[in-house]
Image (spheres, rainbow, N blue to C red):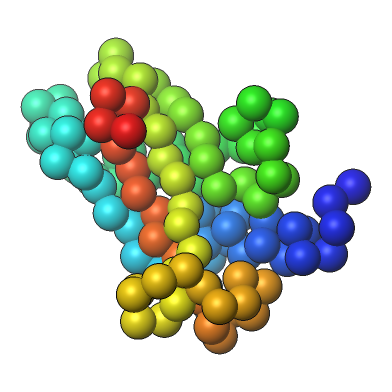
Length: 115
């Protein structure tokens, strides 16, 4: 069972990733994944929906228990997503990751080759 701080971060990361309201943040698609989406004739929401549905957390992809990283396949490509926790000015790491009012999440979706 994760400790209280880990549980708070895990819950906020899951809620943000799923698109639930009330969690500050933004989603970034790298050039590689954006090009891949365009090449398939799809839309950014297609790949975002895959990330939102992700629930395969293991010791390998989530050793800290905060649900901040995942991998998936899109259009035959290995892809990753990760969540970074910043201060609200997006200048440095969050001063208090368990405090939603002091943390802005950035969810980056990329091709594995871009990592």
